[in-house]
Image (cartoon, rainbow, N blue to C red):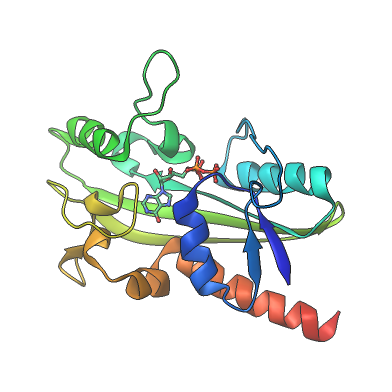
Length: 199
Ligand code: ITT
């Protein structure tokens, strides 16, 4: 199936295309659409649903959206739904990923619980009244310093004790097998197969 991905984040598209390899994922840009959704929701789900419905409204084609982020309970849930904008400059410009990671490390100074989790809320819209949402998580800890070059965003700071590595030190296929996006994507793949067989 051809599916439009309601995102401007190329890393998400790259990861999802590997998982949803039976399907052709198109970015709004591929489809010649200027897509810029203002995230005003109060949860990952609301933003995921909002992005997907907005692009569906513009195209009428099957759309998939991924709203995701990092939650640190000891920081009252920060950066949470503001993960992409965490520590943004006064003029509204987002920090680069490495700067955002430094900002998070500063916030973690003096905090003993470094537990954290990633969330991925994935919404497939087939019509205005027909949609499916899958939300998955990945538990870990905030490392003392960044390590690794794979992945994107907060991956160099997200430590998995069962591997003794950060997510950015895992090969791409291993991240896809266990991550919040990977788990949601694998379930979405099964759902799409089921929809195609049983519609
Ligand atoms: P779109 O809204 O256009 O999809 P975005 O990057 O702004 O792109 P989000 O609002 O969902 O997307 O914010 C997600 C942020 O959370 C992302 O920019 C990263 O900083 C972080 N993030 C999400 N998934 C991640 C992952 O797998 N690894 C590392 N960081 C991740």
